[in-house]
Length: 382
Image (cartoon, rainbow, N blue to C red; front, side):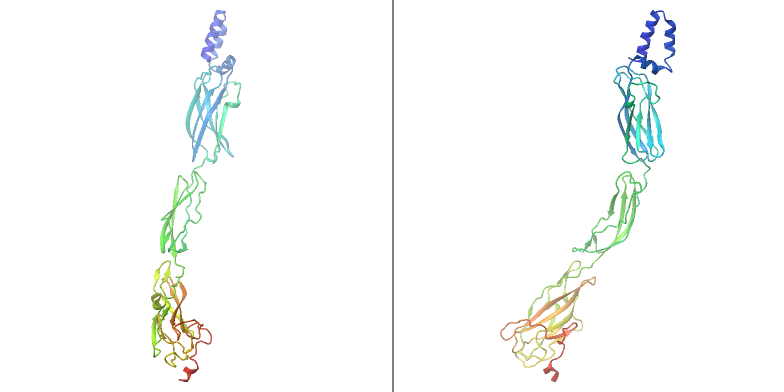
């Protein structure tokens, strides 16, 4: 029963009883003493229900409903929305005029406000003016705490740096130019990073742009990614070239391509050893003055070419030996200057048609084993 519904029947009863003065007193109280009369009529209870709020920067959206929990009607009242900010307390954001509500009726509303920066809680108070003395005052207020304070969004900070990385097996490199980009306020969402191009990057230098976003604002910076080749090529296997002994122990020109298979490089593909290689030394497992199978004595069995791409070796084997083994040791380099050392063998069959490596006995070049560079006793006499 509302105030209008309750007062008039009661006034009528007083008139019938001859109490006109009482009727006038009641009618004059319908303004400032409205709540007290309603409280006298029956139980009163206003509550706040269905509170939902969200804060984007300092823009607050709040929705809720004021509900009349009593079985009787309640005349108009005032609800209010408050924001709580640590250090400053509560701020009344605005008021809501709640109309007459029958028993069990709800009055929903949705409003937007600008809240103080740092707000951590919003709450709604029914009957904020305290007009009605209610049976249950505890449910007059509903509150909601924000997991992150409302704040004016600050731009994320993008930090970049030039990066140099080693090329991988496919001659590409993965890299990030991010130098610790961050979001000063961590708002409104987690920091997202994106590179353009994303990588992996090709050999050489590539300009890269980094964008960092907090979900509402984006900042960018630029740097470069330099991919360098630091991997040495892999020397090819030996071709195991076999030379037929000649009657005059003649020289045979053997190039690195005759002796070794192409090298493989992560950035250069296949490398021709005669183009990318250089002989370090050539060794023979027989002395320089060994008596040969078809010619008793021939000296200077190994002669290196000035460009290091080939060598002259005698097509002979020792008369009483088990075949001659020439071992070419060479360096092969890729375009970036990465070098690797490889070896390959050239065989000259002996009397029995076999060649067995007995270790270096004669050597020309650099890094020769000790005692292998002399001409030999017999050749020294010539």
